[in-house]
Image (cartoon, rainbow over all chains, first blue to last red; front, side, top):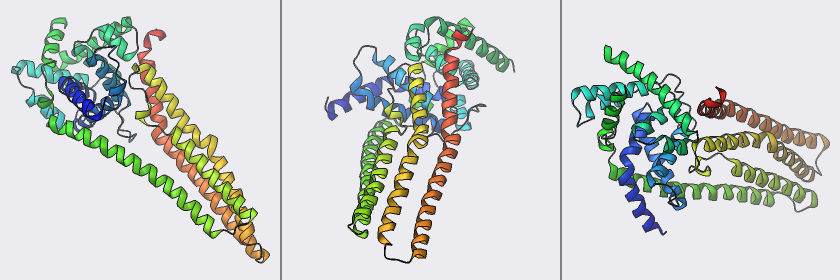
Length: 173
Length: 204
């Protein structure tokens, strides 16, 4: 694959996957600017690994794997922004509140609450719930993360319980 | 919750990059490619600079020291130490690009933790070799250069030279230790924590 072909292929992959990958970055990282940085880092990693892609799995699964791994290792060059007590920054909150279109007010509010509640999860749980929200099967998630299919189910159940309580609490206010 | 989850899932998947960020996709695409070529050029320049620095250092010493057995031996020891340590250090330097991101996350975490631990060990395992070669090399050169000088002057030259190396060695080690504690160990711990969490089923 020469540089020109690689650029064309990359452009195609980028156009087809940019939304789902940005959603993952936006969901996993609290700070909007860091989410932008992670997104660019994912794309750089996709570019660097493009020649290794053998087509054994779906492009989207391959990209999710690179994105999830990039997200797990993402820490702003080790400058340690410890997210023990994650707080969604104002800019991200503004977007969640206003810019998500095509939904009615009630749905928008539900999405806003969901982001807030996901923001309270551990990074690895954020990744799993985001992949489920993206519509990936337990088998696909198991392949990406490396845990058993059964444990994906166990994790999903637990995360859903935590999210359920959080959403009820926020929704009830 | 089940119905709500399905509803949320549908809404979730309608969100586009343009709705979530002011990043322009065209700019992102151009930015990624520009960043890549900038990064490749930067890496190339850094490597050239490192090699140049070593070459200049060797040339500087080669010009300054007399062409005698002791001086040449001393110079060779210093150069060997520097080249050896630089090579080992660069080989073990942690970079995300050195990891196989196509692995599943658990395998990747293991790989990253191993890599980070190896990075930590480089200084512990090899820095003393560089320090020792530098110490012996410089003292051999001083021995030759100050051969004709008075004993007291020779003693001062050797003491000052040796002290400088010892201070730099322990200073360098202390800075490394501090950086490891501050930057690398928390990352290793966090990765291990994530791994343990992913492997939770085995602990139940």
